[in-house]
Length: 449
Image (cartoon, rainbow, N blue to C red):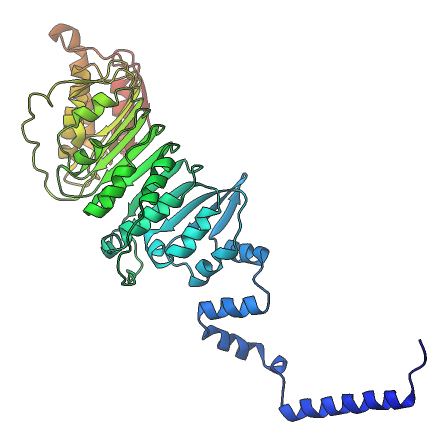
């Protein structure tokens, strides 16, 4: 190349000088603005504005978003899978950024139903292209408006119908005793659900292995239609149901809809104990483990109505090995025949407090007598007795005498080889007495924890 002439050099010099003068006339650059001022300005910018600015500056990068989600503890990784928790106070920017999030590993997703309503399109787009293997939808007891919103059923139907067949676990739970302020649901009309979503839910249920539901999912007729779709799964082995409703027939009506031919593990928690759903147990007689918990609400419980002839017949569960129940569920246990039990655990329904010790112990003793009479004590029997006192000591002595007279009176003899008592805050004197008494009952191995 030839040398640059003096005229060209002079022209460049004039342009540079003119540019410098123009910049000086415009005033200071934004680059001279203190960081504190910039941060104060950015705090006033809404989340969608920040995301738009980041996109214009080409700063919305997948890696940066993942770092941001991990710093917020929304996203975590463990052993080849990732867990995403969209719960409680999640910044709106997170949902705006979901369109740029691409997770290749298996994902366990936990999400508030509230956010499902507020950011339905963003979440649905995310789950369609993500390998969701476990989904947990959460509602809160102090936000009843969320489940009663007109479009909740439609949002749930489209969300569940969009999940891939890789999802093997579905949970819908109601969390209680949360301290945060109830959130306001954006008012909008319910949109019509597509039959394609119903078909999608049926395909999804063909591969689900674990299902945990709350009766809140059956609060309205539109919600109950979705709940019914979730009660038909040929491969479900583990099912949990929590009923906090005061309606006595709520849990029964749900259980009678269940079609889980492969069911092996069942857990029922309820504040009101209805008649035992005999048809359900006859259709699922291959149960391996059964847990029945009566939730204590502080309200007096009405006794169960007299059972009909058909419902009072014994229901045999020949394959049941593990039985756990609280004293309030004794009417159910008294109807079951479980000849091959391995482990039995009895819990009191109430938290034991001063003044309630004798009442609670009577409930446990009634359960204890019932399972012995029915030959359902199992090989390993554990009785949970929190906050023991002298009452426990006296009752232990009564059980000792009962066993000692068993052969004389024809009282059924336990097949139990190990009897365990789970004791809390027990005085040393009572502890020594109980251990001494029970270690001499028919050669039982007694475990006190």
